[in-house]
Image (tube, rainbow, N blue to C red; front, side):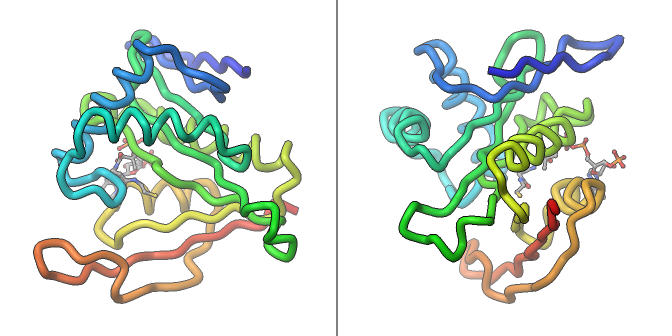
Length: 181
Ligand SMILES: CC(C)(COP(=O)(O)OP(=O)(O)OC[C@H]1O[C@@H](n2cnc3c(N)ncnc32)[C@H](O)[C@@H]1OP(=O)(O)O)[C@@H](O)C(=O)NCCC(=O)NCCS
């Protein structure tokens, strides 16, 4: 497990690659997810699912070898996360890719560079795992996510007009990619 402390005069911040989470961590991650969903920024969920569904979702990450979970904490409490996801083993032709998923921070943890640190960590892990490209996509109105992907050197290569459908309205999505070699 890596343990990266971020220098700051404010709250205590850290970003770690994690291989497991205890029950308290899982509850914190579920609560943080619920807050993000209620703020309409819950990576595809529009309303919070039942507690057990959220718990199963996060526990499931650890049984899929192609998924690496990166957790951000503020003053010890889980504030958000992202996953680096590699293609399944049968996708030999696409094995060079690493994708960012479930990238979010609770609103109370934003503006402290935690998101940049998480994405930087994901890129470091992708390089360690031999990924040759790093990819990310988001709704076109997620300005902070767009700014961070561009900050890390990703290029926008595509726009999908029907990326999401929220309250009967289609929302476009942006697709970003960065070569790591
Ligand atoms: C994406 C997310 C994790 C970023 O976290 P954050 O703490 O808000 O990030 P920061 O405050 O460090 O902001 C990152 C950059 O975006 C910029 N930014 C933030 N809000 C912005 C806005 N509305 N318009 C333009 N730029 C904006 C900031 O200025 C900052 O750039 P800078 O460091 O050069 O000043 C967080 O906003 C989030 O959880 N959003 C909802 C979920 C989501 O969009 N996930 C991404 C899917 S890929």
